[in-house]
Image (cartoon, rainbow, N blue to C red; front, side, top):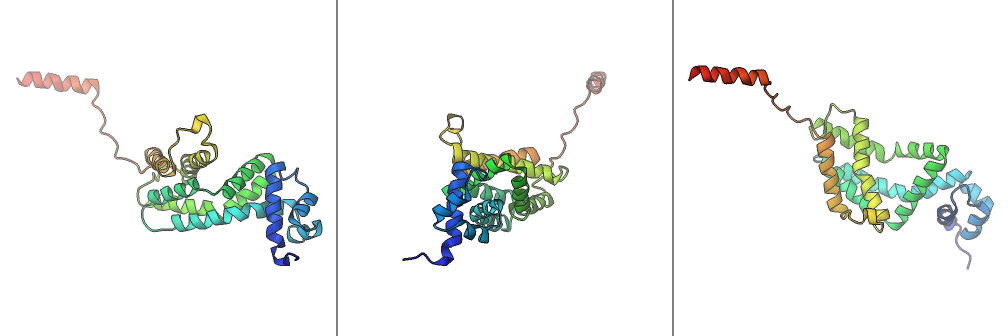
Length: 225
């Protein structure tokens, strides 16, 4: 029985994901993708005019779900740091398909500046505004240090939160990362580090008295005896 026409597009995306992971976007052949999907090159071009359009559709298959979850978690009410913690935990529990796509994104971003630009453009309409809005909330309520530029806080959030979770998820079997805790405790550590590095400004410590001031005070005390 012939497959219904309505499932051609997802079949193409699935076949492309497998080929892109195995051979890279540039190395994968549209002819091979069409064969794997049970269709022809003309149908691929009909849905995806360029190979990069097909690559972005493979990305979107996983990324759209991640963004939807980030919008739910980061858009909740309450303090900013607990919301970021929940987002970190979500990334620590990525599915196998999501991890495959994340690895593919990382590899293609490093190998193609054009794909990197398109990925960044998508991120600017995806998770980045959600994180930046949460950072702004944290600055307003004093959880994050407003004297630090928000883009630098964003870099700290990415480096201390999502990156350790994804490394743990992808490379737990490697001896170097075997000691990383599970997603929840790791998120707690990340939030603690964020609070210490970019957390709300603390009251400045009282300046220490100079040696001269201490000596003068000692002389005054001796004279008063």
